[in-house]
Length: 203
Image 1 (spheres, rainbow, N blue to C red):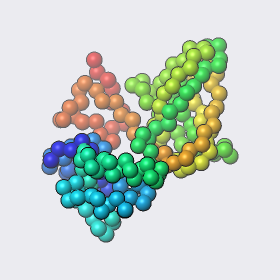
Image 2: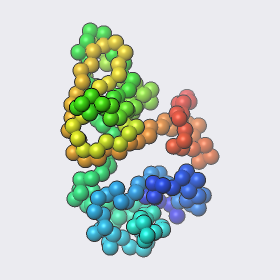
Image 3: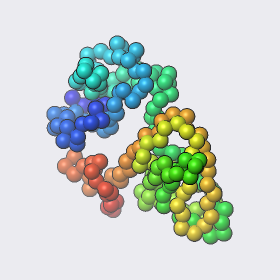
Image 4: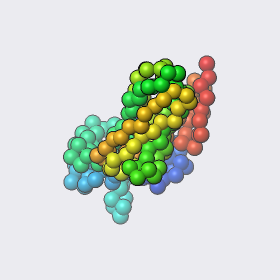
């Protein structure tokens, strides 16, 4: 069995994922289907050929989402519930209002009362973004903690330069993620896994 993407229980360990992979299931990503609020009305449309395994006591399933029909069901459920972000990152537009170059190295998300809500990593190969004086850049940040809907303040960590804070209103859950570099030396026998802290790029 080879699938573009497999949804599995979030409580499964890496060894469970490896078991699936050892049995020919290509697991490129996984997600609990119950994170899609009110998905049950669509479950009756999920046919047996779309399910790898199902646990009725948990109302959970491992599903082949490379199946076009299942992708359409997920897309419809997500659109209807506005509960899950298909892109678990925060897109930022930053201007360096200082007179010297700024290097952005990480992101802080705070609540309006000043309490820290999440920290984030920059989604670039170097995990940094450089801005010349007066320059504007857009980039994505992956958060290390999930955020519920609320109003937040973003502050970037930068060396030199001068970066203003930004406020934003989050209207749906933004889930935490992991950033990993895939290198030329990574292959089927040397995979990048969630347990890897980082991977160096090799020329």
